[in-house]
Image (cartoon, rainbow, N blue to C red):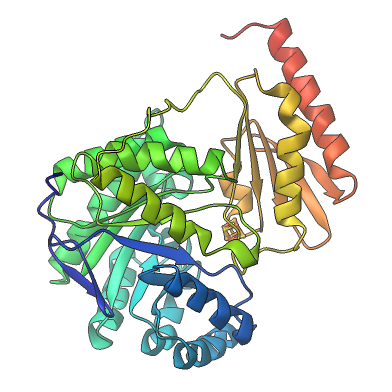
Length: 381
Ligand code: SF4
């Protein structure tokens, strides 16, 4: 039997994370939050599939109104992801069980205000409304100051960010929090969580590989990370992020439960080392922020169109919106992020242009061919 890290217990609605409780499984609604019927239906599908916690995206007051109604119609434990506007926490709080904030986003908003003040605000809101918090750090959106301090080690920047926020919450006397350290590469997820758990074995960890992509590759990446971490006793709750159409979104929970069952039963498949010598397509799991419903089909079409380039060590990222798309594609050799009518194409941090959904695939192919040619002409440095 796997010996779990001695994390403290953090209650989220009717489920408890850490403290020896079973590893909880979460997922996120990808419907438009203001489409209450569709969101309730998806939250219920996730709950019935065994989802312990359901995340919902809220970007403004209209979403908060919808959230209040969603809360009335589902018994799922709810968590909201605060993106840019951390002040929304106050209006969201009466309708949820947990709030997630991203330290990188917190840094950017109201720049003149010390981050500590913003964290205090969130801790006060959580305390007043009997909520838990998740400090959700993403390797791709770590605050710029830490990025500068660790220019060659983005995993360390991510870990330091998480540790700093834990220290702030501890100083504020708020201990009802969990931490996540995510990236689209399983190796970084494994490293980041191992380093963090060594420094803070008491803090419950939420595990996930962001933008893992479509099954089966997305499942493999996630399985690799979870097997490595859970078998070492690291991890108290998991989220599998897959690019799936809305009616299949609850499959994230089924996949998560299957991985947990396999690990508990000692069924470690031959752990596939995530192969860095091959083409790696990452795509976001989609959520209510997706700007065009063609996104899931586009991600699938990119995968099919690029199959010919399997043998090249390149990363292509496909993201559904402007909230995370521009930043999260920076590290990819080629990045696509969706707008309502156009898809933006990037070469790493450089923008190539915006193309219609009909134009994008041939344009991407041109870029990919050029990249392969340049690499073949100038072998790896
Ligand atoms: S990239 Fe945008 S659409 Fe995709 S999951 Fe992230 S926030 Fe949602």
